[in-house]
Image (cartoon, rainbow, N blue to C red; front, top):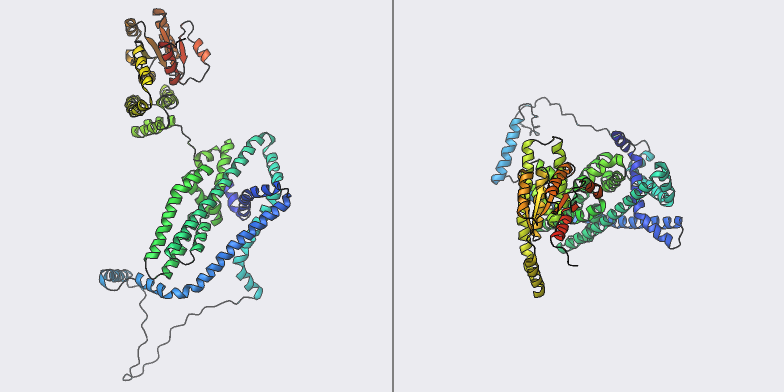
Length: 608
């Protein structure tokens, strides 16, 4: 189906190219037509006025540019001396090291050509009067070129007018399509809805609105960027002293509509004129540097910032789309590449069958941070995984990193590990890397808190400082024992929770999974009857071990405060708590943020 669609786009390009231009022009002119209609002007007069004004404006700009280009061509003979001097300076010298190298290359090329090379034609030999006249040598045949005369004046006129009539015919076809679409806009939209089905009206309405919004915003941003680029470029040329600076600024702004090629042409024209108009090399160099600087800033900073936010297409996809549409439709495809790709991306977003287009061409993140970290750790690229974590921490707190990134990443690891899809050495690397990451995050958070402590202490008054000190003094001596329910993934989550509780000012202790045997666990609890036990479990494979551990603790210490964290659990919490039967925990939570808050409520109840 894909190859069939590409074949249709290629062989029907004579009709599809003007139709595509008409659709884009309809997106541009529709707001103007709607504005005139709101002024109590009929739809047909609004369309007629809008199209006529557009034609007059485009014709006026084109006429002004054509007249000034003719003036430039007429003035070129004045610069003949500068042109000859520059051409002479660019010739390879016959003397000096460069000249000797050039002559050596010519001799080598002559020798490599071999004996079969064409010998130079000898020049005419002057007659020697002392020698007897030899029989005349036959003269070489003269080349004859047959030029066909046109059959009549009509054929000559056709050959002369064809290069002009074809673009005019395409322009007229585009205008006809545009006028028809503007007048019959609602009728065409209703027919499209009927074609896709009444049940798809909601999706198609969203797709059309989003495509129109993105294309219109892109074209508006392009007009603004190109106008500013042309104005700055023209002003710079005026300061350098290049003739017709305003013309070249306008031409540069117009030609930048054509991606890549238009930019090179816009730079070549003023540079060529500066080479002809000045007898020095500095002005052409300044023109080149001016254009290169503006283009680098615009293409690398301004356009990605504006176009990326309004088109939703990645930079690589824009380049690939430009090549694809140029191969299919030539220069017209190059101009239409971005708007057409915007429509394709929007279609892929709303049509499930074309979702791969939205994934391949869109600029949205297709992998969450948790999947990126898991993939980098699978590839044993620990530095890149750390980079993803620290980029996340620049905007979000540590507890959100654990809840929304690292715990989902652990869930992905557990799913693959229970399927047997992870090798033993890679599994060992994964858990070692995660433990090292948590340790490094502890040091990172401490350094961050210490840097913020000075500012917070300066802003807080003595009363607040006294309250903080009294709060620390009144803090109870209860310990919080974070116990893994079953395996190493649970142990990692226990380390996360212990770290968060320590940063909150609580005495937290994390026991490794290897030392979490029931006998050793009960021995630890017997030393401190006011401890709070938190069993850390990562669903869906740890409910049974967590329930077993909960029963053992409840049988031995029925009055002990016991909480359980089922991290990232997405089901019904009441049903999850019912799975523990009679050994009910005091609290059951599914996020680290909720755990820290509720554990602190257990050990420091609020005053009534």
